[in-house]
Image (spheres, one colour):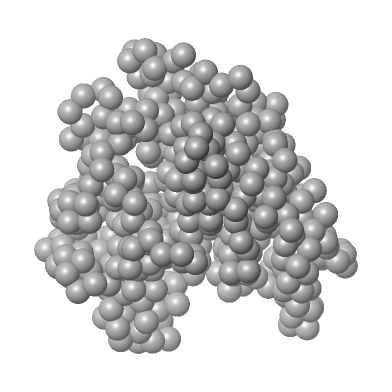
Length: 428
């Protein structure tokens, strides 16, 4: 709230720079000079606050370590994972498998972006570029509602009514306002309808964001109706599953209805650049950073802004290798997410999206029994552990098979993007 950004003078035009415009628009700006200028200017402002931010964060994690010790946990990891009802080995495996198997795949995607735009070098400030963004349709909020209702109608008439009500009864705050926090989220107080916050910019990709948040709404609307207040606190490990299942189902719906190769390419790239990048890259890097932070805290260290920058920079280097140049400000990405103040939350996005990917496949390609099982899972709240909820939905998360299959699926999408770019002559 204290951060004040200078607008950018670009070719005689004033470009507004703030948290929302940077994350919603300027990170994906196709004008390379403007995009990289926005990245540099944005992070210069963040840098001025890094020591204060680091002090607040270090205070939090020191307190978590004290609580872990007082309560007799083996480590701060075991203390935080106990809240999620997840074993330490499962947590470790998530981070290790993604770093080993997804990193090479995403480096290929970075090269596709570089070749598509004819960049002199691929930098960290270029990673949010979309392939063929000029194609992306603009849709009104009413049109977004119609897409979502049609794409998710397979989940049942009552689910569709909930979706319609979210729009008609104004559950969604989608206006862009100064000072509004970035991203999107959904909250469903017990005994009340859901509240969704997002910033809707009329891009078709925002339809998937809305479908995601409405997945949270559909989950907790059903949970609250079928459970008492003490059984609605679903584990973070599972909580992103219903939202990402909706998101992937919508993308598969758009892919199925694509009119030509160019539209197919746009949908496939949206799956990577928005859905899988956000959950399997952005949040994974946070998780890898967070693991190193807590390992040091367990050793009794106290961390500064310099430590946080060093750790995040090391994880970026490990993931992107020499394929992506880490420009100044890259290592300040640790300052840009609130998830560190919510325990071991970041790694659960890859877990949720793994479950969501497998469930979406059952929703689209399965039978009525698969959908019935999923709808029953949405009613169960926290009456089962996250592993048992996943098993009831037909996904075994006690081993790494589902995660590895999801990473293979991501690789297949990127291969298709590469082939379509070549076919459509989109490489410079």
